[in-house]
Length: 289
Image (cartoon, rainbow, N blue to C red; front, top):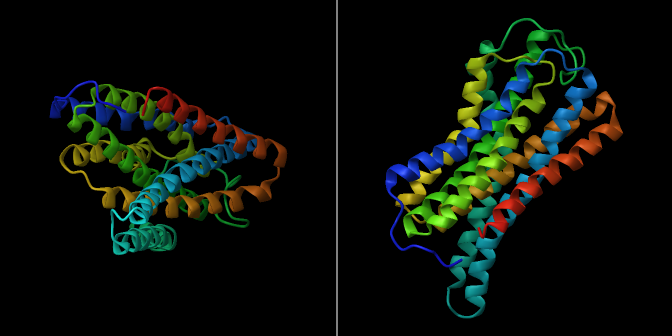
């Protein structure tokens, strides 16, 4: 897209727009404190999260692959060395592996830090908890998984923030504005993806604030980095890390929810979540991003 302006957006405005795009993730988080939801509703919410995460996975994986394919195309036309293609592929492979396998390390860290200690009051064990688990064990497991989801989404949102910062710094003000609006709308659905794995666990407001910053804050940070630095390798790394982490958490949520039944409703929720992600992306594409 050809920029409509040549002067860079002021840094202060870029900071504000990056914050707006990231903080909309908080719109879906209050659902985690609703007590009245029944088992079917909680399963549907979790599988809606799976649908959203599936779309995000395809989105970040395709963006990362496009960077590698761009280098391959340049090599094919003798505009780049093969070493550059191999280096980008290895970066993609390393990022995806660390993002997926490294989740177990993150979970162990969260367990040691007793992240679940800031959860809300007593609740019965139910949907989303391991069979036979105590209430406290179930709460801890759910909160760790939800924090992992927030972390994976944060990696994805950092890459989105980079796009905002690059557009603002290059003077493509209309593109930067469209990106902010589109990403803000898209990020508003990601709050549902974070609270979906919580099941019957009712976290504290403090935990929700932490999860929101973990998932949405990187959009703001990415905008700042993108305004100052243009690095395809950095983008590729974060796309790969996000794709690996998303692959892990999708499998965890899916395996944890399927044993509770409601199969048709759950699959419909997956489809709705995926289409919701597609719709928000189409809005960004329509705007010229």
